[in-house]
Length: 317
Image 1 (tube, one colour):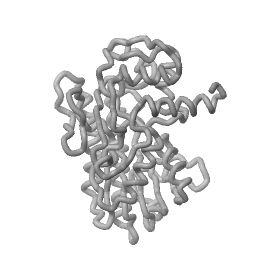
Image 2 (cartoon, one colour):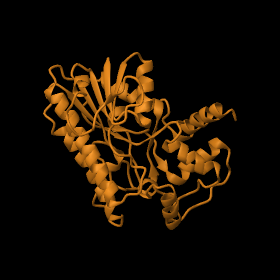
Image 3 (cartoon, one colour):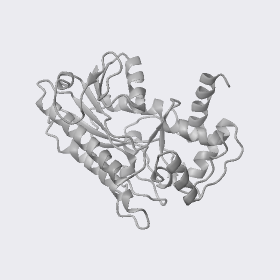
Image 4 (cartoon, helix red, strand yellow):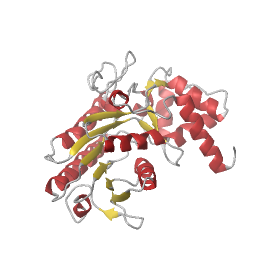
């Protein structure tokens, strides 16, 4: 198949290009900054010559959007909103005007759309959409609205010949440099990977291999459309999550961090505490209900495999 990936130069795009290319598919990347042969330039906002790549393709996987690894200032939040909505509208317009439109449009979304909660898991059918939880920072609601606007832009696109799925993805864990796993492992290896603000908040995640396999599964299942959670079936509290990562790396102790310490650390990393403190208890109801089997359903198993690959690359195994 011919698969077009707008915004495909980041971590998730690299994972998909690697996996889908290995499966024999033709993968075309749309990017604002072409660096590799075959990359096609686009601005992420307006139709242009890039639309010819969409016309005649089999699948479009839109990953475009400003990174969330930043301080959540008003400017950055607006950039997150605009980059996601505008790129989705542009992709929708390209599909709508195509003489031979793709049969499937997979649109990146986020598990952040769900409520900050501890009491129960969020699946697609019974999960609580966030934005109205008491006692959380006001800007967390804006993060939820970004996710909702992102999905609305896809839903409202007039593409009757194209099946549409919104990928409500948890954090994708891979050993690639610069990804979230590398950051967390770096903290754990320094003995800093202890509970944050008590560590009761849930962490949802998915191993890179299961992420790519789930995408291929959804490409094949003509009966699935709408929102789909891409998350391992066993989210766990942050303190247990980091304990398993420390164990995999061989670090017995992780220093705990209070909320204000997390603020300082997030500032130093040019990130935001929402990524650490929001309880994302998300499960893949539709995937498992459709018969998808995870190779890495539990975090200790996934962390062990990822650590082995990191050690293998560095020669410290």
